Image 1 (cartoon, helix red, strand yellow):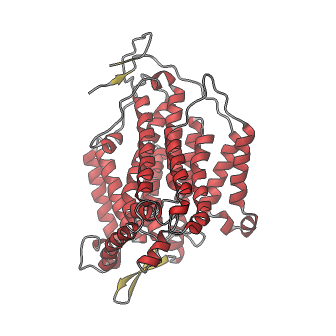
Image 2: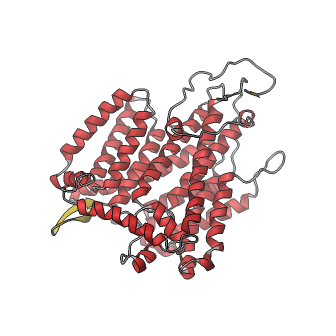
Image 3: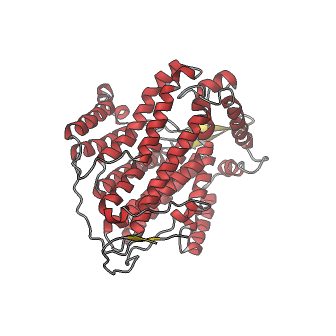
Length: 469
């Protein structure tokens, strides 16, 4: 197996950013968009504050002009290429789908989600901006979880309920009255935020550890109250990744066992039945769990009606209503995309997500080959590891959730591209080395392992050039 090493002392490069106005407007946009300020403050809703902020960001980016670069103009990033190919495919195939009019109507919302990718890539050009942006995003998502939990503890708020069969119902915690997420959506927000929360808090002091444990405990309790089976499985998968990538596996396993016992103690009888129904056909609610599986099979059959170009962007619920008799979108990302874009579109989407992972792995490889202890590179490595975990958990969760047109995919994709670009920007000498990509079985698991950066990874012998061997 070939190994790439750069035997050279790499000096820290000073970072010079631009488009600061656009960056702060984007942070404000994230706060407004995810906390639904327009719904909380009617005046902002009347003014369409989210649209105004997005327009202001675009104007600020355009007014700043192109970034000053030395040498030949850079080539388009491979991830951006794949995203443009996917968008072009959606537009070009409009005449060949089942409902072209619906595609034109739904294209507006999809473009809004794409803006998250292009804004992040265009604006985030320093590690400080990357850190601030992730911190703002994490703070907003934590607020979306803590707010309904506080309302539940203080006033008995639930927000949703589910049927257990035989005219028996169970309350479930959902987003706040101003939010739009159902219990499964709340579970998704929790498991997507936990890896980034650990990244931002960086529990290296007792106070930070107490804060992290408190927030994680509160968010896991909210997940229990949501009774989201897919969220519970996603949390288990996240725990497996955490234990696998840690050197202290025994300690984490013991901590997981304690958390499991505490969760069972906090659950009501109906909540325990809800989670037991994942694998037991005799538990209450098992009928809805079985319906999820049969629903995916039925969605697959619907997708085979138009396997090449699909029924059109955003038409999963429409297709299921006509050909399954249920006006619901597919609760599976892969069958959702197959129904809407066909299997060609599904391949293009998976190639795009694979591009996200490759960008993270490239950032990790660049940092790991650098014989220095620059704090910024340490942070980029931690971001890349966290994003690999987030994308991996998201792919797992997507077996029980739709979300092709949701903004989180494109936000995380933009973060992966920005992380790789910053790594190249800080150590261009290392970035010129041809790295062998991580492939093969277990690539995701290996990517979650931390590389110690407290000491030089390579000998500090000065040499005239980088070499590959």
